[in-house]
Every structure is written in structure tokens, then in C-alpha cells.
Image (cartoon, rainbow, N blue to C red; front, side):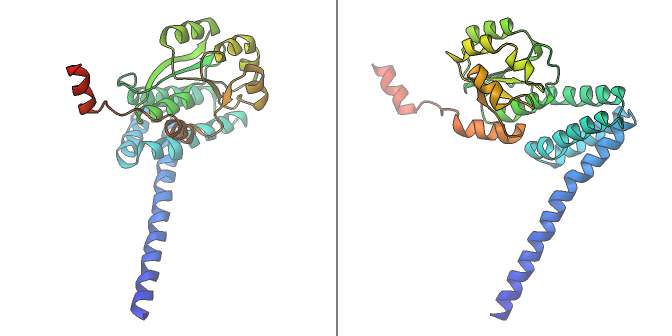
Length: 243
């Protein structure tokens, strides 16, 4: 009994140490990325990104490093502790890397998600994170990017008939100013609002749903709610062929 209890205590201590390490590694990458980008050191920043992409899961890279870094950068910019130049440099470098991960995200046979930011909204990195994670669950992604006129969004919806439309904005007015147009879309499509501007009032005005989680959790929840259909059963195909 004593040996068994000692084994349990040792196992618990090991689990606790592993948890400390698990939390520390993303923090170390976060600090290294922040240091490199604040110096405008692209080679160093790319090297940090290479290391954590090879060391962490995609979800951890986005949830524990990239998104916290971008939130931190935004807060420092608001306080005057980060320059506009640093914000542009860092955002563009990270955006380019994320779009590299997004190659081929329109392939496959899964449900289709149409992602866009409305007119005058240029912050699309969180939306890209959402799309990258959702695509890993088998979804096909069509990405219209930032500053998308509502007429262009409507054209894409009419052409693609997507299973889900995600519109992301940092300011509520980006949604409410086109509420009538978005309401027309929701009559025949599954539209959800995302980002800091996605309030209950905006959802009510447009008839849309809300994605209230951070991008990684929102993508996981969406994939669970609307799973990708499996391939057709071979015996079913054989019966159809004989018929």
C-alpha cells in the first residue's frame, strides 16, 4: 500500500511538472516572437515561427502564441508603447505565414465556409486563424479577405451557396451599417458574426448568429456542430452501379 501511494504521488508530481513545461514553452515562444518583431528582425521572427510550428500543435501555435501576441501588440499600440510601423510590420509578417498554412484550404468534399470582413474592416488575422483550424477538420474555405463590399459578399453567396458565412469585424458599426443587406442574406444562408464588433445587438439587427469564442475554440465548436460527411459506403456504390 505504501509503495502504491508513493507511486501515485510520484506520478502526480510528474504530471504537474509536465503541465508546467507545457505552459512555459508557448510563453517562451511568445516572448521570443515579441522581441524579434519589436526589433523589426524578420529573419529572427521567421526562425521563431519555424521553431514553434515544428514544436507545437497548430491549435497551440494559434491559441497560445499568435493570438495572445496580437492582442498584446494591440494593447501596447493603444498605450503608445508600440509604433504604427511595428504593428504593420508584425501583422503583415504573421498574416503572410498564416496564409502559407492556408494553402489548399479550398480542397476536399466537406462543407464550405465563406469568410470575409465587411467594408472598411482590415483586421482579418483572427478570421484567417479560424479558417486554418476549420480547414483541418475537413471544411473547404473560401476567403474574401478584408474590406469586402456587401454586394461582393452577396455575389459570392449566390455563386457558392456556402454552408456557413462568417463575417468578422472589430467595430459593431461595420455590421449594423449594412444590417438590411445582411438580413437578406440570412433568409437563405447560415450567417454568423465574429470579432470584437460582434455584439448581441448586431446579431439581432442582422438576424445572424454569433461566434463568441476565440478563433481556435470557435473553429473546433463549428466543426463539431457541422461534421464533415464520410465517404460513400462501397456496398452502396456497388448497388447503385448495378441499378
